[in-house]
Amino acid sequence: MWYTARMNMKIAFYALAACSLALPCAAASSSQGGDAGKYVPEEWNVKARERFVNDRFGVFIHWGLYANYAQGEWYLLHGRLDEKAYSRMMYGFCPSKFDAREWVRTVKAAGAKYITITSRHHDGFSLWPTKADDGYNIANTPFRRDILGELAQACREEGVTLNFYYSLMDWHRKDYPAGFQSRKVLGSQKGDYRSYKKFMLAQIAELIENYHPANIWFDGEWDHTRHENGKWLRTLDWEMDSIYDFIHARHTLVGNNNHQTIRPKEDFQIYECDLPGGGEKVVFSKHQPVVNDRPIEQCDVIQHGAWGYRIVEGFRTPQDIVALVARAASRDSNLMMNVGPDGSGQFPAGAVKAMLETGKWFARNGESIYGTRGCKVARGLDVVSTRRGGTIYLHFLNPKVDEISFNIEGRIVEAVYLDGGKPADASVQDGVAKVRISRRQGDRFDVVVKVTVE
Image (cartoon, rainbow, N blue to C red; front, side):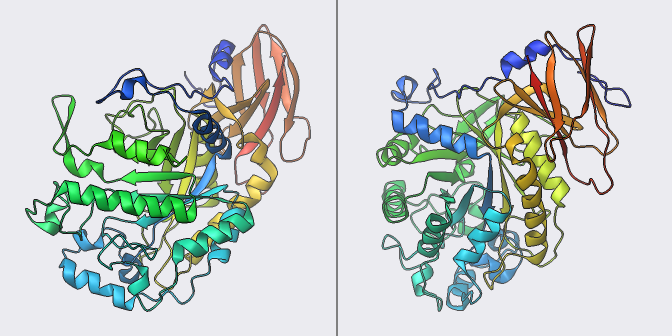
């Protein structure tokens, strides 16, 4: 792939063959223990994966006690706080402005199809009245209300899918075996993994049976992982296969943000901030190859440098968000954009503004994202492409780029601007297709051209 100043990109049109609409759902042939290599997903699982892929855009929500500190979700560790002092914030957590319906309606207006919320982050505090822990949960705050219950109801009413983030690492419990990160809070605590796993399974059962999430999103396994000489070494046997079986038996998908090669029983691949398969920079997925038999989800932040709310605000523009969505979709990946509500229970105003503007773009151009599959015709940073059947969607992301060329066998039946249906400038000569756009005054977002190919 190469570019000129005007983005003349020559690429064989047979790349369309790689833009298949078929959703890869077969299990990987390799295994990381037990009979996992023989795993074949059941019919409910295959259908759930397809629904997940078709949604394409979701909103991540990081929220917990740390919102009161307004310093991000890692403040207990990064602020070098005493865990006992930090946990007393439970008695001051009373988000009086929390309104689950307002949250869900804002997410829906942004064009997102699903929500994934931190049911329990690394600090160990649970956002539902769980009966499995030592009382470190929402029921013992002044607020008392079941956050997840209210959110689940609002999602059902608005037709938005709900998923739960769940931290495998815990900076609060005495039975958690401290790893390389958690030692900074827990010291050399040995813990008791048998007890801790029993606790986790009890909580996961509550989450699934009480609130019916579409997936469980794990994070924190890397606390007991290190990379040496090109290989991953685990310092704790999490017995993940049995945990995945437990979740699958309840007809729920599962993913794991462990920055490693995906296991056979994990239903989708997670890429944290990094563009799947590489991009301008690679931070977390240096040792995480793309596996083509499972759905992919990239997550990123709307508030610069923060997952949980930080008082120092600075937010991505709607144009940034649209570009992230389009680039992810071009690589056959969902995009989940994170927002961190503040201690009062409200989304930051800067995040809401950007989300609502993004939603306006989706209202006009959502056809080019929802239900599409990745396409290699254009995968740069300036122009990317998605596909549905014989239709290609060209996303012009860079305001300085107005043209793309590619090799083609056949002809272009039609090329129109997606947000108005007006014809775009497209031609084919000597097997080279050329599509050129004219930006209108006020075009700040991705300009999408719908190209029908025969």
